[in-house]
Length: 243
Ligand code: GLP
Image (tube, rainbow, N blue to C red; front, side, top):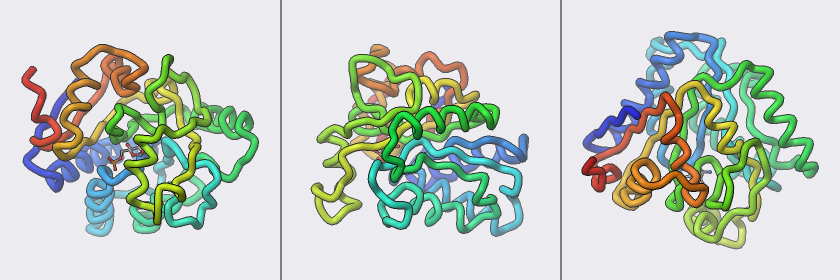
């Protein structure tokens, strides 16, 4: 694992954006695995700026997002579809038909899940998967469990995740209870993984996930077995790593 320790969130965002930009420049038709949450927002802003300066071209890029709330329509401003448009897609020249996000409004869970995995496979797999990290070690919406989920599936969100995500909704009651997410197995198939972390509140879970035991109780711990992982964090988030 490569670890970059930066001074603050801005520097984390610039470094993460640089890793993504390098991927786009090296392989203009890359398949990017994208993430939501507050941590990647700064990286998306930086990518948009580089695009506006004429330094990046998304015209051949395809994207697959990690997850989506089940039951939220695309035009709901808390859907991940809305988030991605708002923070990245509408600001750059990515073709909308090349962007893919699980369809939260598909009631047939089996259909949506197998369809999403088949789609990723048909694209040739993810070249670079961007990830944030939940406080309980979740990646995408893979919650702590007694096994690692292999493929895209529908999860019941845990109370802690609902609590953490309620800041974006009017109240905790509004947070959907289920979500579609790529599985840990789907994520592990990506050729490269980039994880972004920021803030003191992530310090414990960063240490546990990347230097603790590999266990489905900390889904991100599986990434220790991936051959190409880059962790980009600020001093606060990496403060417990004395290794
Ligand atoms: C959500 C997303 C995750 C994200 C996590 C952490 O639950 N499904 O993909 O990594 O939040 O978000 P934040 O970066 O806001 O801490």
